[in-house]
Structure formats: C-alpha cells, structure tokens
Length: 164
Image (cartoon, rainbow, N blue to C red; front, side, top):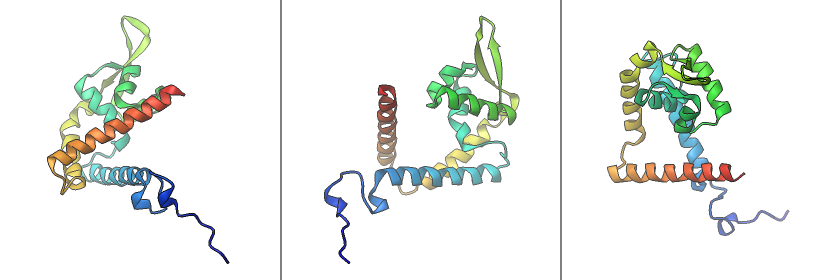
C-alpha cells in the first residue's frame, strides 16, 4: 500500500506533525502543566478555595479593589460572560463580594472579602515558588522576552476577536 501522507514540514510555517514543533501545542501544554503545578501548590499551602483561574482577578483587585465588573474583566482578559461565572465561583468560595455602586445602581463593583485580602502574601509566595520552578534555567532577558512574546500573542488574539 502506497503512503499518501504529505510531508507538511515544507507546507506550513506553524503546523507540524511533530508536537514539540507546533507553537499551539507548546503553548497549551505549558499552560495545562503550569495550571496543574499551581493547583498542587495551592492545596499544599492550604489554599483549598483558590483556583489558578482566579489569579488574574485577584491580582487586579489586590492592586485596585472595588473595580466595576466590566473593568475587572478587561484587566483580567476575560469576556463578560466568563467574568460573571468566575465572580460567582469566587463569591461562593468567600474571596469576593458584589456591591452595587452607590452612584449608579446599574453598576456592580467587586470587592475582596477579608479572606480575599488575607491570602495575598500566601498566594504571592506560591506563585513565586512555582514560577521559579517553571522558569528554572531561564536568564532574566529570556523571561522578559517570553513575557513580551506572550503579551504580543494575547494582543493578536484580542485583535482577531475584535475583528469578528
């Protein structure tokens, strides 16, 4: 039987039948592996209600507590529909509360609870330890380039979504 498969290495710039050469595969695998490490580290630290998905929201609120949901979603890079479900879960886990804006009742602001504020240093410690493991062997300039590249990817994705 004749092999009819095409050698894709000459046809495509980003697709490869070798997973370790496919950027999409590498980004998703790195993300999934990092999420797994964070889940384990949070549990070991006793942060049982903390999910890695909460980090963007928590980081934003630790910097500026009481953000409007729409602004919080923008800073965390999440769509409004995703943000609503995330805030529901974070509220159920006792980390945030929704408060109507006193100047405009149509607007909801999200505030950290005392528990949400109290875990900041523990979370920072876990993130520092996990990221040190993940980025072990990287030079500072490589980390800076990685962050710049990931921000550029996210910007391209947001632009693509905005064009739809």
